[in-house]
Structures are given as structure tokens and as C-alpha cells.
Image 1: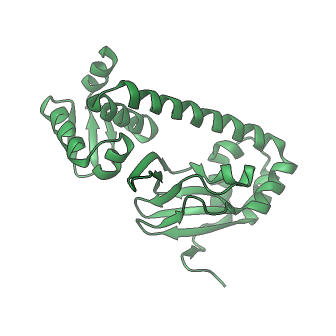
Image 2 (image 1 turned 90 degrees about the horizontal axis):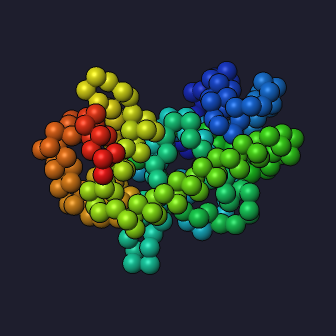
Length: 238
């Protein structure tokens, strides 16, 4: 029987193609992908679905088929701090599977999201049979650690204009599309989430975005933002 939210909408061939595009599985054989696909279930999640909470046991690896999630923690004061956003073909939840410790953060969808879920036992069996997956995962974890170091540095050294600009550039690099007018980000996070990402208030983020808009560096149409080429030049100059 299918559990609530579980989906049968993905064909096996589509699931295998998805796995091939995920960085940690891109170098394994077709046979291994087929076996891996058999162990995966697919779940459809509405906006603001809590996938798991900080300190929960880690029982599965999650791959984003489509949509977006935010990774966050809650400080001692109860304030949410957004660590990052992940989107199509990104994965999360691997740390608790590897070290056996509880989840280190909260994960919530910020738009309708479809997830491919690989349970811990199947994931560990896969790593044991295919050590190259562990090597790829270590590479990905190193990238994320470097990114975390960069974020910490930005929070310490940049003013709020610089932090918002850096966040916009990161989003553009992750999922933007280059056009004649600039880089288009078609699915901007909510301003409250952007504010949590750069450790400021939603009102301050709104003021900074309006300042960028008035200077002709940014255009906004709902959740669609366009960063002008001048925006990049200004940030490089600073």
C-alpha cells in the first residue's frame, strides 16, 4: 500500500536518469543504477512540508526530483537561521546516515517538491558495493564545507548590502539563466527566508532590494528577479 504523499508518477527509466544526474551517482554503472532505483520510493510534498527536524534519527537519503527545500537551524533565542537552499538534483540527509548521529538541521519545502528517498540500509549496502560513491560523496561534502566557510566569512566581513548581493549571486550561479538583460532567477526564495540566510530582518532585505532596484541593478517581477550585468561588475569592483 502506498503511504500518504507517496507517488507512483515516476517511471523507472526517469528515476535512473535522475540518479545519473546526481553528483554522487554519476560514475556508477547502469546495472548499479537499476538496482539502486529499485530501492527508492518517491514522495510528493506540498509547500512548507517539514521533511525532518533537527535531532531526529537519520534514516534516509533524500534527492530532490523537482522543487526546493531550505536547510535551517533554530538558535537559542528561537530564531530560525537558514543555512542554504537546495533544488532539483541536489541531495541531503547524508551526514546522519554516515555517522549514525541525529539530524543536524531542519529541512522544509519552500514550494511543491518531489523527493526520491533511499533508506539507510539500502544506501549503506550501495556504498559497500560501490566505494566510488563514498569518494564522490566526500568530494561533495568538501565542497559544502568550503561553501560554509565562505558564508561564515561573508557574515563576519560584509555589511548587509554585501551579504544580500552575495546571496543573490550564489542563487544566480546555482539556478540562474543568462539572458541579454542579465541573469534571471525565476524562483526567488521568500524575503523572510532570504533574510534568515543573511542574518538580518525581512524589512532590511526589502530595503536593500529596493535600493538595488533604484540603482538599475535589479528588476523584480514577483518571484522572478533579473540581476543586471552591471550588478556583477559592481560586486567585483568592491
